[in-house]
View (tube, helix red, strand yellow):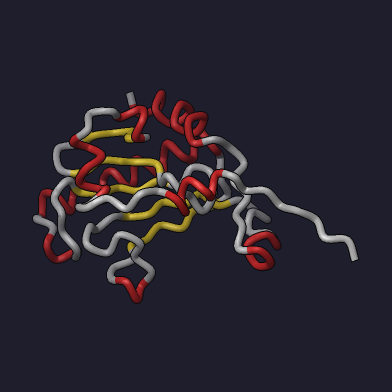
Length: 160
């Protein structure tokens, strides 16, 4: 039996990435390196950032600047802006990438799948017919069809 090799060298960055003290979702907006950190948009209380380790091309997150863990901690103004930005993000993804649908949601708490459980954020994941393929099932590997920098450029022009 001949075994094929599947290379996903970008995963090593995730595996070896030094764990930093503090919250990455608090840290990134403070660095003022939006292009390098893939921050697409800054509102008064929330921002849009590309997920650095996406499920699929165009995977965005809308994040409040305040470090809060639950929806009920958002003020009314923060919540309104948060979901206005979610709507805007879906619109620009539709224009730029033309997906057939979306998964939009929050993972609140570790048992719900939150990778960064202490800082609330909404995932926006564009979906295309047939985008969920055998790779994830067989080898815990995702096929991302576009580099983050290319996706950033496609979306950034629509937010300026």
